[in-house]
Length: 393
Ligand SMILES: [Zn+2]
Image (cartoon, rainbow, N blue to C red):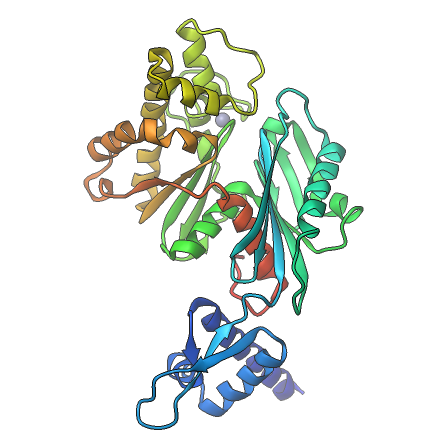
């Protein structure tokens, strides 16, 4: 009995190894798979036959011969199915449709202005369901069809239970996103923190093994990849970089601390700088607030240029802390503040070069793709839907 179970488990593990390799490689032959994995050629052939029958793998021609028959080249079938990724922010929702090869075939952005008109759980559920429906309508036919939906949320998320524990800037606590969406949507739903989704997406795109993804907008959060794995911490809630204090005094933060990085390196920090300089500021920021400020700064308005300079200094100090703590290979900046990257880059670079420890001064801080979070959420759904793929968990 146990021998049968062990053999079946071993076959599953081997199949996962082979599909994982095919997913990573652009093109590979059966003998290359055998050489790379150490599995014998008969086992590889049998596993590949199953994967072809399941339409996860396709034969795409022949490669160069090293003496014998020309090898048949195999590829992961990027059209085997599709996944949807949703990035929920305070000011907008971005939704993407991606194939199994993480190629985006459709994307949609909807401004929501949750600051002006707060959304409760049921309104946000309906809004996400509407965005999923928009994307579903354009999904091409494929062997496995639509396989799942990933949702990235700005706050503390219990990814195993599909629950938002606390979304501070939306004023939402203890929301079972998966159950709520199930009333509208029959696809499997996967939920994670937005910065975790972004970090996973940048990792899959760049294969940089140690990276930090900083999502900075109304709030600030980070996703941390260590040695190719998402770092979640003991309770699954690591990455609250916005709540590491950069001042022993300062404004109260909703987390209970004072002087949090988020108070100095977010949209509200720009608002405070501008108000202190005498600019008339609305109490509630419009969804295109950073956009408007960037336009003013680009036009040479000195108040706005100074606000971005102050922002860059505070953003830079927090980034240096993260560099010195994690010694990553790269940092990716995302969120609405990334729209001002060109204004902040000289100051950010100067602070990293002068204030980081010597071994961290060369680490690049670059803007992430604007759809990283949505694509990462889609990637999480993909990894959960095809159990044979490498997973982030
Ligand atoms: Zn805080």
